[in-house]
Length: 303
Image 1: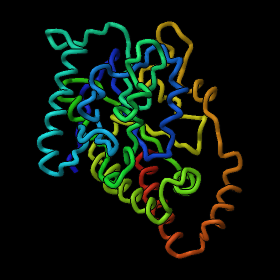
Image 2: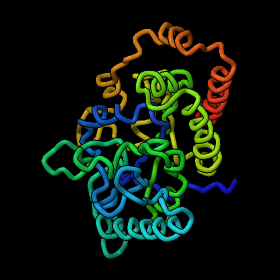
Image 3: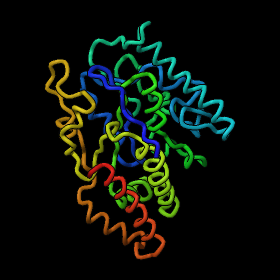
Image 4: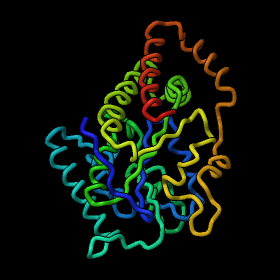
């Protein structure tokens, strides 16, 4: 595949996207990052009342940088228009007349999964949640949800074209736990509906179209099964550990804030298998196929 080489590096300014199928842990970053002294969101590029930010929304917005409800014509018109707008906003908000970043302090901008509850209200506003969201795979619900897929390969191209340091954190979770979380606990879709969607998204979008077409220097991975332990180098990769004279680190914050709701995951999995008649051939097949795709992602992540 045509692999995009990472060439933009900065010790001061980085933009980060949290990549993961819904149910892999986006929301936990709200509390984990809350006390990070140099973390914030990218003001001015997440969206407004006329468009859906980075991702098309079934609820409110008709287009975003990752898709359009008008099909191919809409993608050509709307996505290109929003992409151009995003690049212009990078210039307007973050760069001086000579194309250098205005910020002199170290700052890491989280495109998604970051919530500012302060008075500024400049990040994820609950009243306009549909403009931002966690931007999971897929993003939002509705009949078109299968095609509402983020694309970090596109983001990487956009930021690289501006000489901006862009990084990705990939969230990986056990296939059975993922299905139990979304099909059983949250009751979003039937197992037979949601599993094929995730299989296709993992194989065709996350792996084939995106991560396999990115220089590995763009991304690092978190294994949900190992939480609250994370790779020791992840905080440094994001440039957020021990900043501004603080002893705050990402690893310590995960240990303080991650709440493991699984309690006894093995016992829960066995009970769920029984409740879902796991012996049924189609149910077992879906899990095994999703697990195979998940293992490919683990291999790519060196997990």
